[in-house]
Length: 133
Image (cartoon, rainbow, N blue to C red):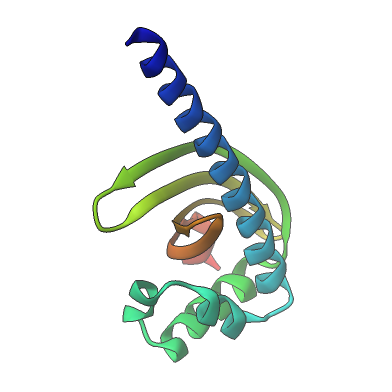
């Protein structure tokens, strides 16, 4: 019984770290798309619950961030969380300290997983530079 519990915990951990890696790769893609001003692609690839905000609103939001902060120059993963929720499946939340050309920011990304595919569910950013620029 103990061996089964340890095996299940190990399998879950491996699966969780793989999902963190996949979500981290999705963040790299997000930043690349934002730096290339491909905002519509980000919106279209996000999961359906993300579309509560209209596409024009979301594009204006990202344009404002990009205009004020500039391109991403350095990204540091601060922490991550993996959860399994009824009705939602696996959810990975990643917290970053991100340096842009014109200032730093804290970013939070929430991804839902369907098999091994990460879909953006939420994006949050905090930066003094967004207010002062």
